[in-house]
Image 1: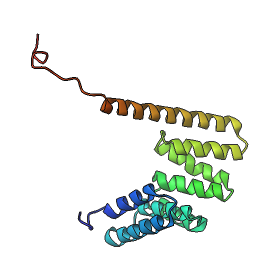
Image 2: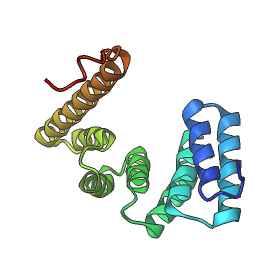
Image 3: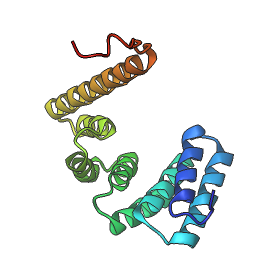
Image 4: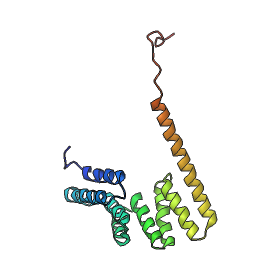
Length: 172
Protein backbone atom coordinates (compact mmCIF):
# COMPACT_ATOMS: atom_id res chain seq x y z
CA UNK A 1 0.00 0.00 0.00
CA UNK A 2 1.15 3.52 -0.76
CA UNK A 3 2.10 5.15 2.60
CA UNK A 4 1.35 8.57 1.09
CA UNK A 5 -2.19 7.66 0.11
CA UNK A 6 -4.58 10.27 1.54
CA UNK A 7 -6.26 9.10 4.73
CA UNK A 8 -4.30 5.87 5.11
CA UNK A 9 -2.54 6.86 8.35
CA UNK A 10 -5.75 8.17 9.90
CA UNK A 11 -7.58 4.95 8.99
CA UNK A 12 -4.73 2.85 10.33
CA UNK A 13 -4.79 4.76 13.62
CA UNK A 14 -8.52 4.10 13.96
CA UNK A 15 -8.00 0.39 13.31
CA UNK A 16 -5.20 0.23 15.89
CA UNK A 17 -7.36 1.89 18.54
CA UNK A 18 -10.41 -0.26 17.77
CA UNK A 19 -8.31 -3.42 18.08
CA UNK A 20 -7.04 -2.49 21.55
CA UNK A 21 -8.54 0.76 22.89
CA UNK A 22 -7.00 0.62 26.36
CA UNK A 23 -3.54 -0.72 25.49
CA UNK A 24 -0.92 2.02 26.03
CA UNK A 25 1.30 0.64 23.26
CA UNK A 26 -1.61 0.71 20.83
CA UNK A 27 -2.44 4.28 21.80
CA UNK A 28 1.20 5.28 21.21
CA UNK A 29 1.25 3.57 17.82
CA UNK A 30 -2.05 5.19 16.81
CA UNK A 31 -0.73 8.59 17.89
CA UNK A 32 2.37 8.09 15.73
CA UNK A 33 0.15 7.29 12.74
CA UNK A 34 -1.87 10.47 13.36
CA UNK A 35 1.31 12.57 13.56
CA UNK A 36 2.39 11.06 10.24
CA UNK A 37 -1.02 11.92 8.81
CA UNK A 38 -0.59 15.54 9.92
CA UNK A 39 2.88 15.66 8.37
CA UNK A 40 1.70 14.16 5.07
CA UNK A 41 -1.75 15.74 4.71
CA UNK A 42 -2.11 18.52 7.25
CA UNK A 43 -4.31 18.67 10.29
CA UNK A 44 -8.06 18.05 10.23
CA UNK A 45 -11.09 17.76 12.51
CA UNK A 46 -11.00 13.96 12.23
CA UNK A 47 -7.34 13.74 13.20
CA UNK A 48 -7.76 16.13 16.15
CA UNK A 49 -10.83 14.24 17.37
CA UNK A 50 -8.86 10.99 17.21
CA UNK A 51 -6.01 12.61 19.17
CA UNK A 52 -8.63 13.75 21.69
CA UNK A 53 -9.86 10.17 21.95
CA UNK A 54 -6.32 8.98 22.69
CA UNK A 55 -5.78 11.68 25.32
CA UNK A 56 -9.11 10.82 26.94
CA UNK A 57 -8.18 7.13 27.02
CA UNK A 58 -5.00 8.15 28.82
CA UNK A 59 -7.10 10.16 31.31
CA UNK A 60 -5.46 13.37 30.14
CA UNK A 61 -8.62 15.45 30.27
CA UNK A 62 -6.92 18.79 29.58
CA UNK A 63 -5.19 17.48 26.47
CA UNK A 64 -8.38 15.75 25.31
CA UNK A 65 -10.29 19.00 25.70
CA UNK A 66 -7.63 20.86 23.70
CA UNK A 67 -7.77 18.35 20.83
CA UNK A 68 -11.57 18.19 20.76
CA UNK A 69 -11.76 21.99 20.85
CA UNK A 70 -9.35 22.20 17.93
CA UNK A 71 -11.35 19.58 16.01
CA UNK A 72 -14.53 21.53 16.69
CA UNK A 73 -12.86 24.75 15.48
CA UNK A 74 -11.94 23.00 12.21
CA UNK A 75 -15.46 21.62 11.75
CA UNK A 76 -18.23 22.41 14.23
CA UNK A 77 -20.38 19.74 12.60
CA UNK A 78 -17.93 16.92 13.38
CA UNK A 79 -19.89 14.50 15.56
CA UNK A 80 -16.74 12.99 17.09
CA UNK A 81 -15.61 16.47 18.19
CA UNK A 82 -19.07 17.24 19.59
CA UNK A 83 -19.26 13.95 21.51
CA UNK A 84 -15.69 14.33 22.70
CA UNK A 85 -16.30 17.81 24.06
CA UNK A 86 -19.47 16.60 25.78
CA UNK A 87 -17.64 13.62 27.29
CA UNK A 88 -14.85 15.86 28.64
CA UNK A 89 -17.24 18.49 29.98
CA UNK A 90 -19.31 15.83 31.74
CA UNK A 91 -16.11 14.42 33.27
CA UNK A 92 -15.25 17.95 34.46
CA UNK A 93 -18.65 18.20 36.17
CA UNK A 94 -19.94 20.72 33.61
CA UNK A 95 -23.14 18.99 32.48
CA UNK A 96 -24.94 22.13 31.35
CA UNK A 97 -22.12 22.90 28.92
CA UNK A 98 -22.10 19.27 27.70
CA UNK A 99 -25.79 19.50 26.74
CA UNK A 100 -25.04 21.93 23.91
CA UNK A 101 -22.60 19.56 22.21
CA UNK A 102 -24.80 16.50 22.73
CA UNK A 103 -27.76 18.27 21.16
CA UNK A 104 -25.56 19.29 18.22
CA UNK A 105 -24.39 15.68 17.81
CA UNK A 106 -27.98 14.43 17.81
CA UNK A 107 -29.03 17.10 15.32
CA UNK A 108 -26.17 16.01 13.03
CA UNK A 109 -26.75 12.28 13.55
CA UNK A 110 -30.18 11.53 15.06
CA UNK A 111 -29.46 7.77 15.13
CA UNK A 112 -26.30 8.13 17.20
CA UNK A 113 -27.09 5.97 20.20
CA UNK A 114 -24.06 7.13 22.18
CA UNK A 115 -25.20 10.76 21.94
CA UNK A 116 -28.68 9.89 23.24
CA UNK A 117 -27.23 7.76 26.03
CA UNK A 118 -24.78 10.46 27.13
CA UNK A 119 -27.50 13.10 26.97
CA UNK A 120 -29.64 10.91 29.24
CA UNK A 121 -26.78 10.74 31.76
CA UNK A 122 -26.30 14.50 31.65
CA UNK A 123 -30.04 15.07 32.09
CA UNK A 124 -29.98 12.80 35.15
CA UNK A 125 -27.13 14.85 36.58
CA UNK A 126 -29.14 18.01 35.92
CA UNK A 127 -32.15 16.41 37.67
CA UNK A 128 -34.32 16.35 34.53
CA UNK A 129 -35.84 12.86 34.87
CA UNK A 130 -38.42 13.19 32.09
CA UNK A 131 -35.80 14.32 29.59
CA UNK A 132 -33.43 11.58 30.76
CA UNK A 133 -36.14 8.95 30.36
CA UNK A 134 -36.94 10.16 26.84
CA UNK A 135 -33.28 9.93 25.82
CA UNK A 136 -32.87 6.46 27.34
CA UNK A 137 -35.95 5.31 25.40
CA UNK A 138 -34.50 6.71 22.18
CA UNK A 139 -31.15 5.05 22.91
CA UNK A 140 -32.84 1.70 23.54
CA UNK A 141 -34.94 1.96 20.36
CA UNK A 142 -31.88 2.82 18.28
CA UNK A 143 -29.88 -0.04 19.80
CA UNK A 144 -32.73 -2.51 19.28
CA UNK A 145 -33.18 -1.45 15.66
CA UNK A 146 -29.45 -1.66 14.91
CA UNK A 147 -29.30 -5.11 16.52
CA UNK A 148 -32.24 -6.24 14.38
CA UNK A 149 -30.55 -4.94 11.23
CA UNK A 150 -27.32 -6.76 12.17
CA UNK A 151 -29.23 -9.98 12.75
CA UNK A 152 -31.09 -9.63 9.46
CA UNK A 153 -27.81 -9.01 7.66
CA UNK A 154 -26.28 -12.13 9.24
CA UNK A 155 -29.30 -14.21 8.31
CA UNK A 156 -29.23 -12.96 4.73
CA UNK A 157 -25.57 -13.86 4.40
CA UNK A 158 -25.55 -17.14 6.32
CA UNK A 159 -28.44 -18.96 4.73
CA UNK A 160 -27.52 -20.93 1.63
CA UNK A 161 -28.79 -19.41 -1.59
CA UNK A 162 -31.45 -21.53 -3.28
CA UNK A 163 -30.08 -23.30 -6.28
CA UNK A 164 -31.63 -22.31 -9.56
CA UNK A 165 -32.12 -25.18 -11.95
CA UNK A 166 -32.12 -24.59 -15.65
CA UNK A 167 -35.84 -25.37 -15.92
CA UNK A 168 -36.94 -23.22 -12.97
CA UNK A 169 -35.13 -20.21 -14.40
CA UNK A 170 -37.13 -20.35 -17.64
CA UNK A 171 -40.24 -18.18 -17.93
CA UNK A 172 -43.50 -20.08 -17.84
